[in-house]
Image 1: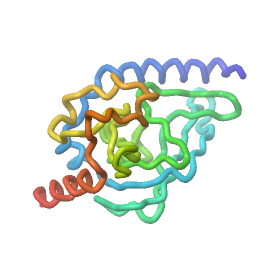
Image 2 (image 1 turned 135 degrees about the vertical axis):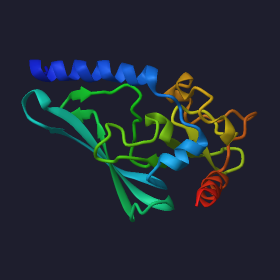
Image 3 (image 1 turned 90 degrees about the horizontal axis):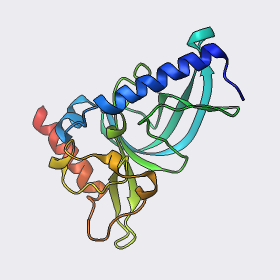
Length: 198
C-alpha cells in the first residue's frame, strides 16, 4: 500500500526526527528514572491497537498499548493502563519511529512512564524507561532485562551502558555467567529510592 504524498512527507519527517532522538537521547541514571517517572508499574501486555489519527498532512499512526497492572510501584495507574505511542501498522501501512519499544501481547514489563498522551513515547528516556521481565531458565526466578536485552546487574551502571548494542534477538537470552537482578530486588530498590526522596 502506498502512502499519500503528504503522509509520506510526514513519515520522512518523523524518521528524520527519530534519528535525532537516536543520537541525542542520553540514557537516564537509575535515580533519574525513578525521579522523572510519573507512574512506575509492573504489568502484562493485554492489547496492542494501532490507528490513523489527524487530518491531511498531520495524519499519522498511533498505537495504544494496554497493560494489566500486576504491581504498582509509583503513582496510580489503576488496574489497567494504556500508553499512547507514535507509530504502528494499519492495513499494511507501517510507520516506525527509531528506538521506540515494540510490545507484544503477553509480554511482562516494568515501565517508567511520563507524559502519557503528549510525548511520542511516554517513557523516561524513551526505550530506557522499559524493562522486560523474563524467567531465568536456570533458577526459575523472574529477572529484569533492558529494552535491548541486556541483563540488569548493577543499578549504578544504568545510564552508563548502551542497550542499543544488544539486538532484539538477544532480549530473551540471559548469559548464564551474568546474573540479572530479580524483579523483587529491582522494585525494592525503586521503592527505597522513593522513600529517600520524600
